[in-house]
Image (cartoon, rainbow, N blue to C red; front, side):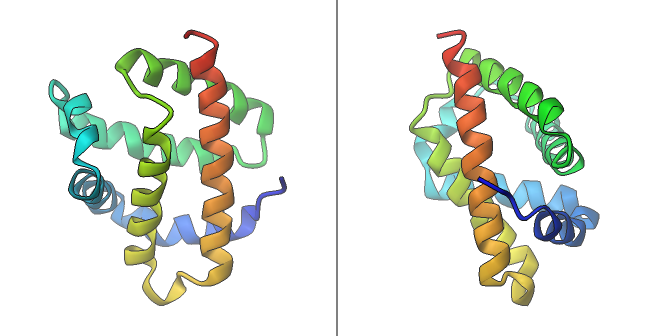
Length: 137
């Protein structure tokens, strides 16, 4: 699959100045729409967790043109998430919440092209992270 790197970079650049609000909204959406994932965060410092998500999103965007670096980082992230109790069924929930959050923050700039770009990117990210999770399961 070929990702639309330019659309991903441009759309992320629009939300990056609001990164703290964006990730807070993401977790609000995730917990409201999928309360079954909330127990994973019962003993988590959510302010630190939001910072981790920002860093992960930046890592992805900054390495879209460096697939080897990105693949390795995502596999490691998938292995860590497996150890935290993340199961495969949670990945679509996270993806749906992420897309919902992007749609809200991008507003009129959430075009069909941008939506498809993020759907494709998330599918690739989840797939690579699951490979990492399977390596430790």
